[in-house]
Amino acid sequence: MTIKQRKLMLHFLELLAKEFEIRKVTEIDTVFLQLIPRKELIKIVLWLFTNYDRSMLTEKTDAELLELIGDDSCLLSYIIQKWKDGINAVPKLTQDEVNDFFNEKMIDIHYLRSKPVEEWDSYDVSNYYSILFKRGKTQRVYAIFTSDVKDEDKYAVTTQPSFFFDTEDEAEEELERICIESKRLKSDFIIHSLWRIT
Image (cartoon, rainbow, N blue to C red; front, side, top):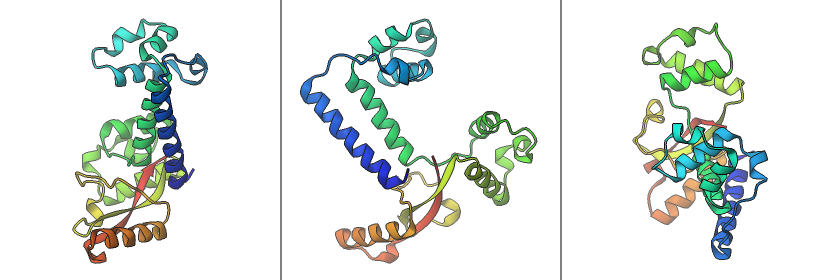
């Protein structure tokens, strides 16, 4: 699914959430028990409420978890947030994330598995992104940054771009629109390609 398609789906999900608010939906459809695994139900409750911890929730039944979630609109709010996060998610080079990936894909013999992330050079990083891409975990996307962001810093900036584009042409079109609206020069910005988590 392209980023544009994901944004369109997100738009319709947000329209549905507004409809739920207007109708004041106060129940939850039990079909979600078939569609959402227990582990995810626990994540939803933890996302909705700060007064629970994981250990408290593991003893509850699936029906009790759904009761805590409350209604379809709460569930939809969680799904919308996941979609928003997913549209802009970039791989983080943390040891935990790298370990999780190699464990999930059962890749035991790759040299990066045993090399600490803080010791990786640019070749290692490029190699890792290539592995993620080959395993269907990432896709190449484009984003607009301010012109002071260098290619080697595009993942390290404190404020990641809020929009990614499937093609460089789409990013160029958006950049032109930004320049017209903000009355800034095209040279104030730069387009970088990034890896996005799929």
